[in-house]
Image (tube, each protein chain N blue to C red):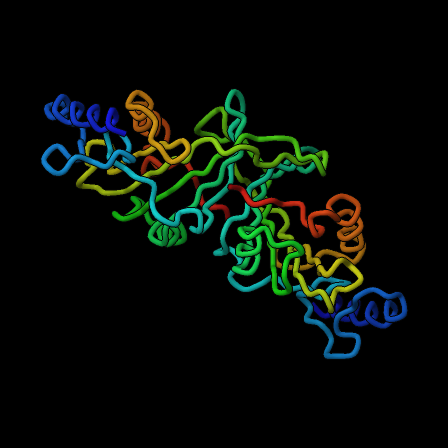
Length: 170
Length: 170
C-alpha cells in the first residue's frame, strides 16, 4: 500500500492549486484503500444496501451491474429529491456477464469486476458536482488516471440528474 | 377481484384429489391477490430486501432482472445452506431492457413487467419441492396456466440447487 500512499501525498501537493477537491491535503493522509483524487473508501456493509436498479453494460466490458444505495440515497430516489442530499452514497456492483448454464435465454453474474462508489458531499467535493468517486477492484482503488475520467463523463452526460446515471427501478 | 377469487375457489375443489399443494382447500379461501395453485402473495416490503443478484433474460422477453431475498434467504445464501430453510422468500423483479439514453454501451430498466416470488415451506408445498410460486403483473397474479409451468421448469433444470436458479452475486 505504501506506493499508493506516497502517490496520493504527491497528488495532494501538486493539485492544491488546481481547484480539485483534494482530500487529506491539510489533514492526515487518506488511507491506502481510499480512491485517488477523492479519498473515497468502500463503505461498510454496502452489499446489504437496498437495490436502486440493475443494468447491463455491453461490449467491450459485457457486465451485469446493480446499483445499491444507503438509506439517504433510497429516500431521495423515492421522493424524487434532486440534487441528492449530502450523505448520499451509491455503490455499483459489477460482474462479467456469462451465459446461464441452466437456462438458455438467461445470462447471469460471473466473476466480480469493479465496485464503484459515489459519495455526495457538496462542500468536500464542490469542484466535482458535489460527488466523490471511487473505483475498486478486489477492494483496492484503481489508479489516478482512471479516477480522472469519472466526473468528466458524469458531467457531460447526466448533469441534469445531479450527475447520477442510475434511476430507481420502480 | 371477485372473478379471480371465484376461480381460485373452484381450483381448490377441483385440485383436491390431484396431489397438488392447494392452499385454502380446507381453510379460508385465499385472497384474490394470491397466486393460483400455490396461494402465494407479494410479500410486504420486498422492494427493500437485499440483493441476491441481477440477471439478463434475453429475447423474446428482453428483460433486466434482479432477485432480492428476505433475511432467511440471504443468510442461507451466505452460509451455502441447501436446501433453503423454510421461511425463505425470493422475489425476482423484472423490467423491459431499454437502451440508456445517456450512455451508449448501457441498457437499463424500462417498464416493469413481472414480479415473481418463491416461498419455501417444505410441508405446505411438499409436492413442488417445498416451494410455492407466484407470478404477478401490476400486483395481480397471472393465471393458473402460467403457474403450472413454474415448478416443472425449476424441477427439470435446477433440482440440484434446491430448485433455485439464482446464485448469490459475490
